[in-house]
Length: 583
Image 1 (cartoon, rainbow, N blue to C red):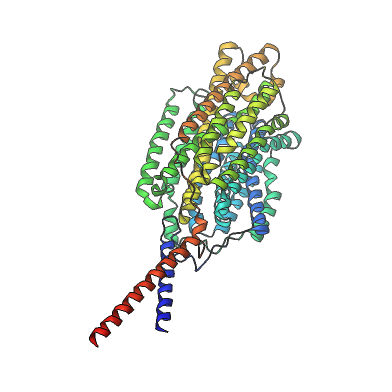
Image 2 (image 1 turned 90 degrees about the vertical axis):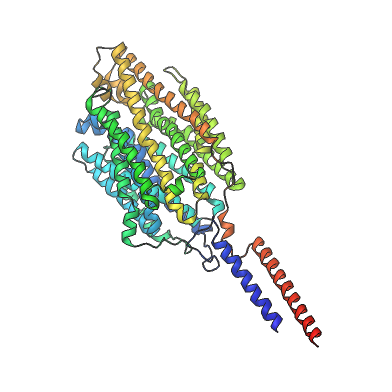
């Protein structure tokens, strides 16, 4: 009886030791001190399908707006006659999305995930109303900025929810599928925007979000359930507000505004040596440095916590994400311009001609997601995708005025497949390597890199395109008014110009577009080099640590039990021997 009781006690101690060792692992979440207390309850089957459908529809809603503005701009400028504001219609969304992404990551960390996600959708819909009912150009920009703020919360929240509700082994495939859905919406955005602008009014590009957004909110309320083992980090309201890092947010936001102003003015409405252009460039540099200094002093409260960012897996993948997205965004925005200006295609036709890019992007994303699910390696596929992306970008670079349809379709296919393979992997790698309590902050950092790439490199590409195009016009067709060339818009060149003037303008557009593609090619090649510094290691499978009794844990407990039994037997034998000696 006593021996049995001792064995039971030893077994209990062994199980307790095993439980404690699992809870203090570096890979495990700190909130779950005892995995046996709240076992993981990942969604599966119909439940998982309903959650994925709901958050994917939310992604479609917000990502359509990223590209829809491209074909709505001519209608907006016709109504408000503010050509100087053209750059802001697109960049306002990227600026707010980049600045607010880490802030949303903190909110998802400290507050209820479901209600924060619903709040992001609500903010996006408010921005849609402001832009749709805008009485002037400034109101459109404000509406687009509010949309960007909400969009960053929806996109980041979607990736966080995937990480929370699905088993770790399914994350690569689900994130790859999400990326395919995201790009589908981006590509279709200009097509839908062109249809609304030409058939009804540009305001319907924003009004359409309301009848779509309403059912999405209902679906979220009905189906979005966060597993019970996911717990928000306990904190007071004061701590939550301090952790939002509002000083860092303001510094990043104002620095991006200064850069956008400088690139919008320089060489177009003002000379590059103009005092206001120089001042805004200097302020951008100073504020950017101030942002990083603030993040250092903020410590764990920073928007981009250095204890996460200093990890090689994080910073190397963040850089890869920033640069590879630069090539993606520039092609996404300027390939339709190439079709509309050089080949005289309508907005709808140019959208149709980008479908091969979309199809092979989706194929690449799903294929890489499936392969990573099986192998759990990420770096080899980032390198492979970057190499294919660079080859495709080289083919896009050689496109010219007289390039055939077969040539640009082939270039799209290769580039799209390469981008699809590698672009969603950085998010998968960083999320998969993060502790549970760091997932929301790490996701915020990666979404910031994605949108920051748009805020920086789309603005740089626009400045590069406009400056080179105007220089070519002034040198080859000095009698043309530069403001008239800029204001015509890519889709209206054939209506505004004719004869030799049209030929000169098309050639000038081709010079500007080719310089943007040169920049994109450099970014793609640089992404290849960045992929070489990403760690070559398998993603940890945190799901195995969540099981109450794995095979390894059982073996370990058995060993501890056997050791305890052996020690008990030795003690018993020793005690018996001493009794015999005494007798």
